[in-house]
Length: 440
Image (cartoon, rainbow, N blue to C red):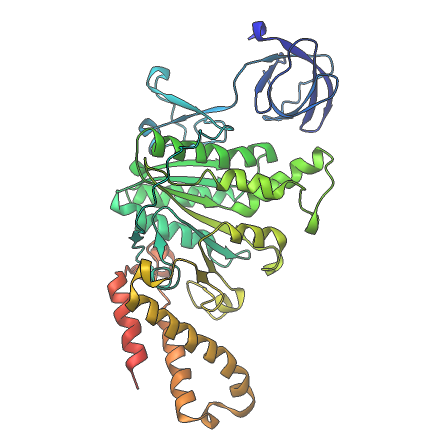
């Protein structure tokens, strides 16, 4: 490594390390290795004057000191990818978290984490393909379209992770696509639960998981999302497979970037977020795209701080999504599961060209009924339901039936609820809605 040149550490401030070079300096995204007892890894974040690189202390190496030598490697962070990694659980640097060793290095393929692949000059629009999830409210209100992005948005404890686990359980069962899961800044317990759920459902063979959870430093929480995206790109571009990409939680990615921004002493933007929030999120989101080799269909959960849907970071993430399923605390408190806000949930993919005229017409009628139900609730609270006109009372009751219809028992909750999980075909969901609309 020394032949590429080396630098000398000038300062260590938390996770931020300044390294000065006499000769040729490193590139942004290059990995340096400190000559410390722990062989600390330093990731070049930016280049400053006086041939100095601002680096991030990836592994929180506490043995770094001033004037210590850091060698250039000429490469960025690389993680093992490909079919040999199916069923494995890795950290942001591609190291095993499941207690099993990596396969022999000769059998491994590595891919750089930071650099996205070159874009193809050709563009071919694929015909939209609806993927059935077996979850009534998703298949009806926010249809799952191959190669697009869907977001599950809500505050803490309203069921985002459970809904994601159910989606993985239902969609990954088909085996038509490989699944990549990125656990970004979430609870360690949830990682164990997901692993157990996939193992019990015999779904690990089609899934590769990356975890950088809330006990880890912000560098690793940022990198884990990029590592998982790199694995997805390999399956799409090299193995030419369709990929299901699950990320839990995208807001934690922004939080981690925020922490790094504070360390880099950047002036915050609106809402207290980092000034480069837009470009940082776009760089990751734009890599979750489809091309002539294969598709990446993404499901992303988004934590809503203080249940405030107008939060700047939440709004920005919503712009990246083709469909958003909003989970509500008020609805969760009523015991309705999944706790979906049927009025606020929306999808740009709910059009006749994609889901068909029948599905589209039903969705318009359902949304109209639900809006009417919402407006009638305040009137009923004052004068009572019996004072409504016959048509208003009939519409109100139909809306109540629809709300009940969209509740569902999940497979991943069988052990807790004692009830058998339910899978509904899209056709059965449409028939059920038609029966309610035509009743009375």
